[in-house]
Image (spheres, one colour):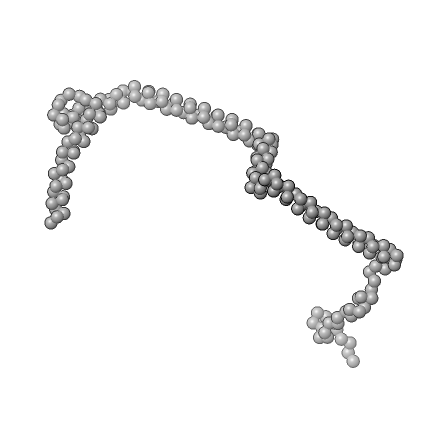
Amino acid sequence: MEPRQQGLLDKEPLKEVDEDMVSEVDLNNTVTEEEREEMENELTKLEEEINTLKQVLASKEKRHLELKQKLGITPLSELRQNFSKSWYDMQTSTAYKKTSETLTTAGQRTSAAFSNLGTAITRKFGDMRNSPSFKSFEEKVESTVSNIKSKVGGTGGAGSFEEVLSSAAHASAQDTPTNNVNESSERSC
């Protein structure tokens, strides 16, 4: 017979390892029977201590809740107290103080910059108002207002801009009723 080649595509099924053989292998070969008993005893004692501690903790938590109820401490008041303490801790932190100082300084500088900007704008408007081109524009507006007033009001005297607007509104109001009558008569047809 020809020797078989074994490769990745071997046609024989894989053999499973016998479970009995695995259980016979003692991984604790290095532990003697006395040491094993001692460890089991220690494990038992630890489990008992853990159970005792759980019972003590449950008892203490129950007493804690009773005292809170007697003192009128509610979960909401606790939350408020925790929030207040956290807020205080944050405000006293170095990072908060530095940030607050930085923002205060930035706010002061921004305020000063806006103040300077406002002063500069006011100064520029004052300069502009005193300029020859603005004075010429102002004279033209006054002349136009005077012309409008003389046409609307019938008086040739110069008046304030508010008076001209008022007389123009008055004249417009007198025209309005006739328009409304025409519109209402057209609607009824």
